[in-house]
Length: 213
Length: 213
Length: 213
Image 1 (tube, rainbow over the protein chains, first blue to last red):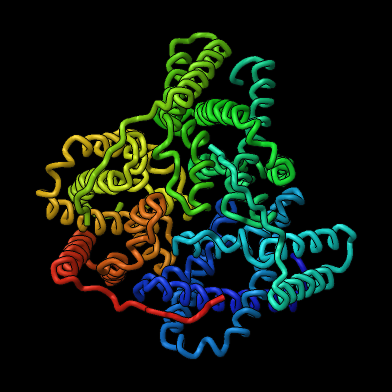
Image 2 (cartoon, one colour):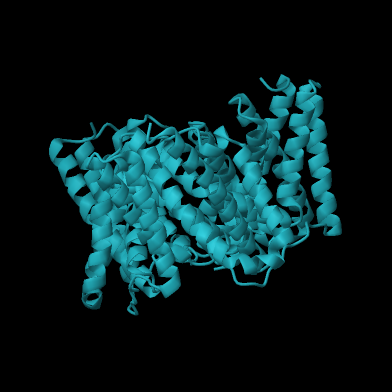
């Protein structure tokens, strides 16, 4: 539907790598909160698949991905468990995981945009769908770990997702080749996120000290 | 469907004013947590539109309001951003915002009741739908800010919503004129909320010190 | 559909007892956070009916249980209010409530499995559906009380639910008598949970001290 067979296969492969990477970083967050093995497993599944699930519930896009492909539950839950065994070596792989997390962000964003495009929703909703898919998994992780979602304070996380989505739909609207547009949007988003991580770029913060209620 | 053309237009106008006011107060809450500009924007959207979204997801009432009217996303996100610029003057407008928040509570409640009435749901569910629409946005805001929802402790917030809904459906059940019933229910809810704010009325608290688990 | 008339009636009776018990323990949790009476009432409803609601929303199984049976809202809300009156005597009944909570866990799990079986979903999703129904109510309670969900750290809670579901669908797959399989699965789950409570069994914890982001 969107893009050639090869692009679809590439996107699918990147998706699988990304959900494994998300589940593994979520497992480390669970370890910091001393959760038990089942909690680690569940937090991995929720973080990796939660963004897509919230998107599908909000857009009425049934059945959900993991209901159609229950193997994703086993894959992400298994990756989280596996993390317990290899956690002591993971700090050496920190940069790889940050890279995979950035890949996940843009892949999830494009997939989320595609879902909304297929449902023929308005363009603002397409961008929102991409951002929900890319960012909400991490928000759920942070809520379940009882901390303020990083999303609201981290280095351009949501911004990268929004700009990637905007670039993608703008390119498609100019009737450019789908695969080209998708590649450019993903490379742009990936580069921006990695630069933000490298140089500590972030959006300006809004600091307010008054009373609100 | 429910009420005359003029009432519907009035309700719609009040709805737009209310979501802007909710987004702006949410932006101040974001500022207290030092969120970045994108976080402010997102928290504004979620707070203003979250109650209706949760209602529609629970009642299976697809598509959601902001999917049909994506301009609401831009309006609430924009209002939240605008708040950053004018925050320093907002404490002077504190009473106006408390008033608009109270208007929002009753307007959201009536709209939520109407959605459930249109779906011909049982009366208990109609009241619940009104309360979810009126109160859940603020609950989501408080969860994302990592505090115990104010709703569970604030001045008659949920109570006002429940009583407004009960009065509304009771009036409709007596076959009274819709516009009259709606006006009376809204005035009653608004007055009760403002009196509660003015005199610090609140429901009795339940304080329990024992062990539970 | 699943099981004889008598079993269905028994399951339904146990369900009603379980939601009342869940609402009452949630009310105590609300009391520890000094919520007001309306907050107590709402937390009771959300805890008792939230697991099934999240399941139905995720599986697209509309309408939700409490929309079809609004009396459940009154029953659980009423049970939570009633708890305020009798809280001072409840520590004497602590063991009864722990027992009823364990009954609720296995009953909710079986009901959740049955919903997914009726929708002819894959077996992994059937087990997930049972676990969501059994465990998510408590997770919502803990999020609304602003604490890390107990589920991720408590005595075999999610584990019991998963094993009960696995035993149930394995038995059904061997074409054994439904009522027998269900009874055995429930007894097994109940026994395991009570033993875990009695002897403080828990899953090993994953403790990780490194940096993640």
